[in-house]
Image 1: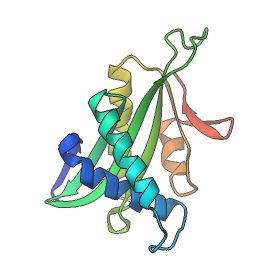
Image 2 (image 1 turned 30 degrees about the vertical axis):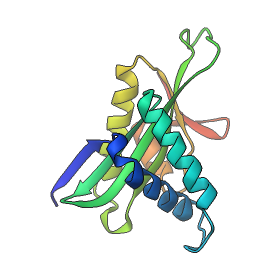
Image 3 (image 1 turned 90 degrees about the vertical axis):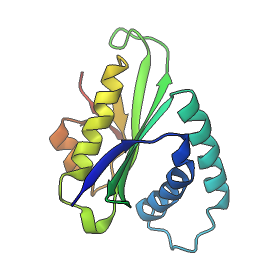
Length: 154
């Protein structure tokens, strides 16, 4: 394997949008012919805006020129609290590795890059929703169940 981990840019907009649909079809166990036109259009608009204003970081993983995995983290603001005085939060999403590449540490490295990105931005409140398949990875990384999601303790 010749793996490359790349932070996505606006030049990756088409690929990001296609990957998002692939992830949603797989995560929701939907048939490949499901009409995702509206979700695709909205996802493209989201990525375009979020990459421009740095409210989202996406990691793309390639084996040579072939896309094999991805992950993303969205940044948002809530009211400050005692435990999170800045109110800044990060939400990890769109974690996906194509089946032939699973169980090789690719998702863990992608997750680590996303957590590092959030921490560089001074964010200590990081959460995600876990599928049954992803839950063991997130638990090994340190995420714990909190109100139906998983959170990484500060």
